[in-house]
Length: 407
Image (cartoon, one colour):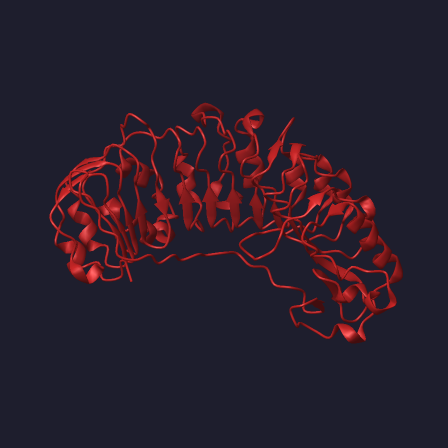
């Protein structure tokens, strides 16, 4: 079904249905592990090591478990095997604790913990996966000893109410593939050089971290992470990119596998043309910056080798006429380039709906709400865009009707 929102002169709004597609990055559990309560492996045949069991019990003392999620973490004989405890993954060969899944994510039906992170985690030397996201650590600092968990491959401390500087000791996590510190109250005091030691990192999320002091250094540092696929730096107080201070290097070689780049909600006034030389780039998010000019100019700037992978995601608009003027009062542009979608909401675009959109046969999402577009709703919206699942034209000055088959 399709979701359609539409208003004519601010008086007509039609909502038909909602279909939400969520794309997420998932990381598989180790083949030699199991997690309590999920049915992977047979915990009855494996016993955890006594030293690691004691470390987990000490770790639990630092947590305030308001909802009894860790009721299985007991020292009695019948619950002594920590490989049976909630959220614990053990190796089914050695019994070593490999993973801790202790997210407080409401979306996953879990309840958050409060308290502190005990240094007893250091006594889990084989730990490769640590997820403490969506909990409440009461504005405490990220413990420096986490940088001593040398075997970590996955570290998620997002949405956990941490504050203060990111400890540079994280540079010791040389096997890390996934790092998410987003949506905390963190800041960078000096630089991002600690990141340069993470040559294995594939997913990096520092959203809501104050990066204002690193100026353009962030671009040079992350560009030399050879395995980076996803980079999220939204709401990071990134200053305007200065053309004169941009690092001069070959972007196509510096960023080898980068697919997703999220820079929305910053202060960017310029996007380097060299971004178009990132041949693997698939998704680029630039909303709520200070970009201006014409959309076609931005598309031309991204017309390097990335154009082949971005082409579907910009719906061939670069082949159309110069129909968009980004010289708006708010200087806020929402440009989502992904999965054949076009989102330009909350700007001051005016005039008719561009006829070049009729050629976007694979279009899935069109969101042009909260602008100054006017005229009749084009008939080709219903005739040619057969894959459309989301259409928003609200708070413009359109007239006419939405084709019924879209509802």
